[in-house]
Image (cartoon, rainbow, N blue to C red; front, side):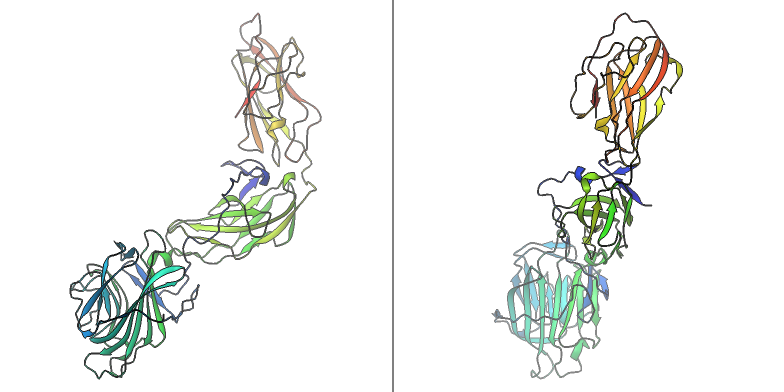
Length: 508
């Protein structure tokens, strides 16, 4: 269903819109930046709150093998040994938080862990496995001898990182001649509540053994009790040199939004004021479990700085009617947001259009649906007067002027009050004899159907009454009535000797 936006006001039943009427607070311009890095990979596997893929995949943004040059050499050497260092930033791993300064354990057998138990275990396991060690990053878990390990602080993706480089590693039962070289990078947080990213980069996976390429190794991530894991490989010779494997929070992948395009109006379109224009776009590809909502962005500049935002809901089209204040050049695009991870994405394009000044709507508003109905008799004295002002574009409610007059005075003279500002009580000018004092309430939540209710200050005595909506009732395009609209009714009620004149006011 196409949602319609018309001039000046917003409502649920018929949404109205005028660019000049959308309030944009200073500093509230949307940034249009992704909430988190966007990933659109072919996911190779997931588990323990992580998803993974490697650098052979065509992903957006690209993921490539990277090997930071190590400088922080450690004096760690041994077989079936492990050593400790501390996290330089908060780290969330498999749903558990480890604050900055927490100890991590680095094993000569190619694993990194968050607890000490069995970190010297040389026999690799198929993950998940409840047997210790648990809560681990298995970069190349095998029976290895470590000769040179480096610890460095690095930076990439605008994130801080901790690089752990196994620069000289050998298969423990082989000649220490052809070294394995592997680097693990732990990254700082990409968003509250998300598991931190882990990347493993393989510079050299050949040690001149049948164990080359991971044939007897485990690569993956396992949670703290060994119940879940994201397993990349177990005892399979599938690793290659110059390969990267990335583990990221599963939600960051599942909640990503695919590219989508603008459809109508075409770039460079010309739009007449008063004519409904359908803004439409293709649907963003999304595989998460959240809900999508789209927002129309309208601005007078291609960068969309200070853009006015119009909620388009879950649909892919929105009908807009522009008014005389909108004449000129505009730019538009669409932003989509998903509720699962809070990610947002802009359409791939920003298109321009021009609002032309010749109005297609030349009809003035009309008055109808009166109550009491025209010509009614025996109307109770305590009755309010209700009438509707209709317009195909939008009624300018500031031009509504109404009077109710009894049969002893003129019906529709100069005593009406135009509610130019319905935030103020406006005193009436001197009234013609017979005009009734009261309160006029204008409900313009639907600008195509403005409902007006006049409540007399006192019950109406028996008699004949004339209702008048003064000439000059206009729409937002300036089309106005040239003659008053009048109707009559009669009441049954008690006689009153004196009328107390009050202020006619318009309330919100």
